[in-house]
Image 1 (spheres, each protein chain N blue to C red):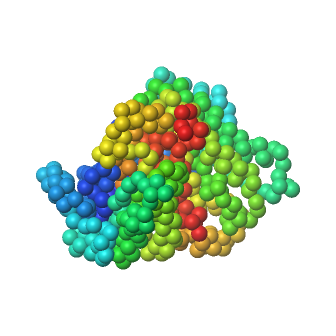
Image 2: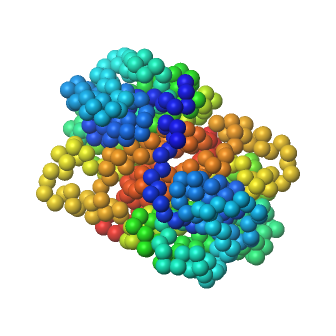
Length: 254
Length: 256
């Protein structure tokens, strides 16, 4: 490791990453595995063919199905502790209120917000067996700011789900603090992910226009979010709980 | 400059949080210059770190003296050969009730805590521009930006000012690749806090309102500084990380 890079203090341990198949979740799985953790990458659909790594195990479960998450953890962990949960599973849909169906609204809230709550609840028996457990929820710049720039159509349900996840994080910090479990969030801005590409809805000029509005002049790389997640899970962050960290290249300050 | 060397200036590094930052960064291989007003304390910290094989050097400076911030940056850049990171931690928190606060008291706190931040950043920006990953980290506080404390109006205003300065410079220095962020400590157990909370039972009553069940340590702050100062935090700018053990989560049982 070169001087100045984060020296993560993971003396072993196990992490569960939801939405671990692509984008920020996949980067987080990679970084945590490289940092010495055993990682469970959980996703709703089976993982594409990937090079097998002894430190990464894949599980298929819907985060909105508490029983399915419990079953997956029982199968993979048995009575062993779980040290970290990263709630990264999320979906993004665009629709103005007029065309927004109740089903769409509930689906986005279910996956992004209820899913994080139920996954953490399902994981709690294993987290309580750890000496220094921590949860990181992946929210969004759109939790605190309406961003029309990268969304050709409005995203009320997505924005509301992520704002809810911010408050869930603060409440978790209080609630889980009694077990010594910390809870924090990271709020990514414009990051180069498959989800961001889908958002652009085929508007080819959008990424360039959006990047020009970011003080850093570019999109973030998923690993730059993963680094912040890894820091917040690490021993160095042992006094940080209930905090939220925007990773947006300075966009929200403009 | 090579990937294997990273240089940093820490102000107010002779005691408390600043000393914790100096110790952690030096222990992790950064080349550290640090300043302070107390010459003998600074020399002692330097001697201890050097004896442990760390790259640390003390530069005496009183940031309220005219020309001192720019002179400090120039001295640090010359001594280190480059400057990748500026950590501005130096700060004072004397107590004055509003009715008793003189303009001199006000200026003293604002000059030390806030005006020095502007002058240090101004002097450091051209040096940081030469770095592959230039970083400024300001030590702010939860006191001022998030909460208020009676008798600390000048301190609260200075720390609120630090956050505004931080956000403006984040935008202004982004094009040169320099990120500008803050760390906002909660109640951190330092030598001066122990003096401040000397009254029996006070320490315990403060600890009771912190969800983490303990006061923070200087190393807790240093770890957050280290993260923001690292090349890994390159897309984070204009942000403040609260390191308070959950103290500012509203309505936590027992908090006021």
